Image (cartoon, rainbow, N blue to C red; front, side, top):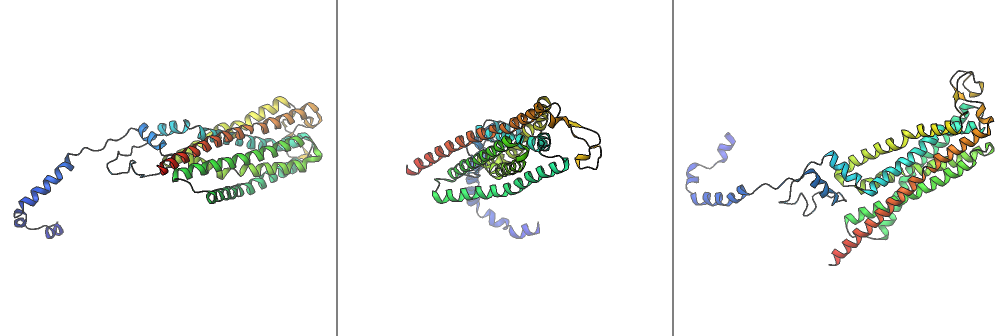
Length: 348
């Protein structure tokens, strides 16, 4: 209060300027009578976000412009409605779930397949060889997939200048979706080749190499897929979009996959289950830890059932290629439409 007292002019100075005070009050009256800008509903806010897919905040004429409408809190259900109404986002998430279902299913029952085919006689050696092949492919594929994506994007930026920031984001999303689709196709071909030689014990080394290459290509899609999803949705919904992606791949991918593939295996190869008892061939010192039924490898019908099961698991990943190819087509068409619109507005 003391500081304010020193700053305020004396009352005589104020009373000496009544005309100036009256003019200030007259100028402030319209501002006081001005109504507050309307607050949009959550659905209107989501519609505004969907109209700005590049995630720009404070764009001219947007909600942060002077005199513009206020920002509304976007509800969870409104974000969910926005994401589920995006065909490209749905295709990306379902394709990721199909890819995860194949990888987790084959990884879960891979040693059982090899033991049933007679490729290994030791359970410990079989598990170690299969796990090593899959791990090497995953460890190398994940970072190299990101490097490949960055290389493609850098070359695309040198090839042409986008018409706007929104056009640049749309073009990048289309290019990266094409890269992950191509990587998934390579992984599918390697898995199909591995499935073709899986039932031949003499070609077990080739099977492991092909499976390692398949995992290498498939895990190379991880970084690019996350990038495409963040470029496809508005910036304000990116955290929820990534969370919904994780929920989708668990709900439709790695959670039901081992159960379904296990049920198919038990139906097509009923003698290829786990039995308990002393098993000196398991490499576990004869401990009762469970081992594959010895009747499995001796039964041609069960061997054919195992081979058919691994083919079913591999061919399920075709959905990933199809869905990601559809997402690539949608994003490419969107990028062309945005580029043509920006070019027309720029020339006008």
